[in-house]
Image (cartoon, rainbow, N blue to C red; front, side, top):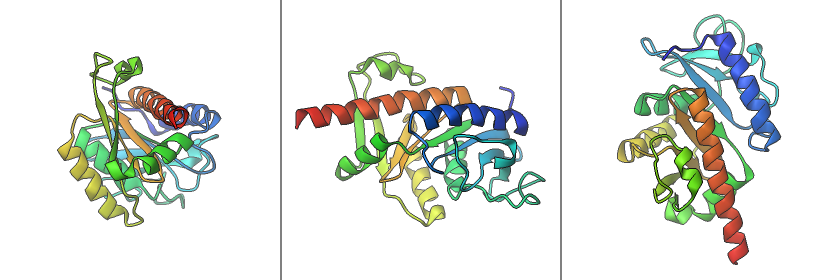
Length: 213
């Protein structure tokens, strides 16, 4: 699969960001997006820190390496800082061989990450929308979305992400408690689809929970 160029990635991020912002999934400066430029050496295009995802321009993205540090003119010489959570993107790309990683910070993902924190995850089954997840063929599929405790020690959190992905390689996403959803795909289109499916499942489950009380 052909990797995008940095300008193409910025344009794709802009379109995705506008859509997600309208839906309330990346308000303020929340969320971050990345896509793989190359595998050897590993290079990701990622949104810069403190950037509104509602209007991403080429000046709002940069290239980082496997150590999460900026490389090239887009980063090292521009003064841009990569997202504080860049190491989580790198962990997902390396563990899942993903081509893109998207992080949203919706109301429902935040609420359910708190509501189900004691269970350390949320399980979805019986929903037709599950079939939008790559490799899922039936609504009877049970999708497990782990919940990890949030941590400002990002390298430590990245190691926990790697452990979860090693233990559950078939999952399509995870939640950080109080912080939102991470999901991924072979490319940005697939990762975007996974965001839409998982956000639907989170909102549906949250609304059902409130109606049943």
